[in-house]
Length: 144
Image (cartoon, rainbow, N blue to C red; front, side, top):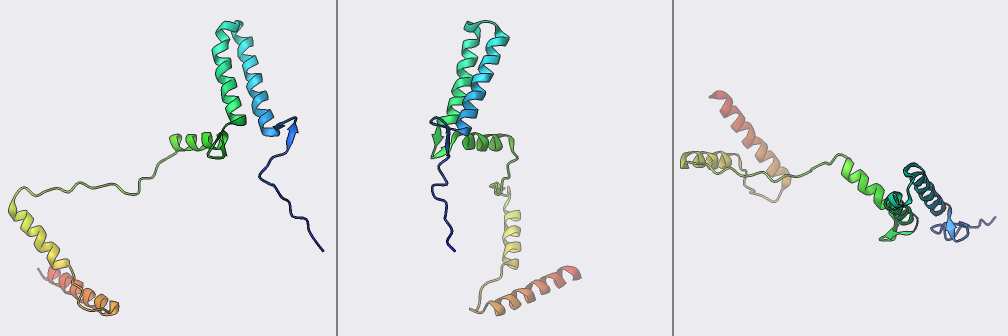
C-alpha cells in the first residue's frame, strides 16, 4: 500500500484572494480597530495618527518577515525577553587585594596546603592520594 506524502507544508494556503487566513485576520482586525478609534474620537484629523499606527502594525504582522520568520514570532520573543525572568549563569567576582603582606602570605600558605600536585598518569592513584591528603588535613584540623 502506498501513501502520499504531503509536500510544501511550509507554504500556507491562500484562502482570501492572495491572502492567507492569518494575514486576512491581522488586516481585518487592524481595520476594525481603526474603525473603532474613528468612531470613539469623532474626528478624522485626531484619529488619523492612531489609525496609521494601528494599520502599520497590522500590515507588518501580516506581511513583514525578519530572517524569514513572521513578525509575530519576533514580537512574541521580544515580549518574552522583556517581561520574562532572566537567569544569569555567570557573574564576574571582583578579587579583593589584601592590604597587608601578612594576610597575603597566609592566603598563599592555605592555598599551597590544599593544592594537590599531579604525580602520576593514573587517575585512580591521583584520586586516592588526594583523598589521603584531605583526610590527613581534616584530622590535623580536628586535633587542634
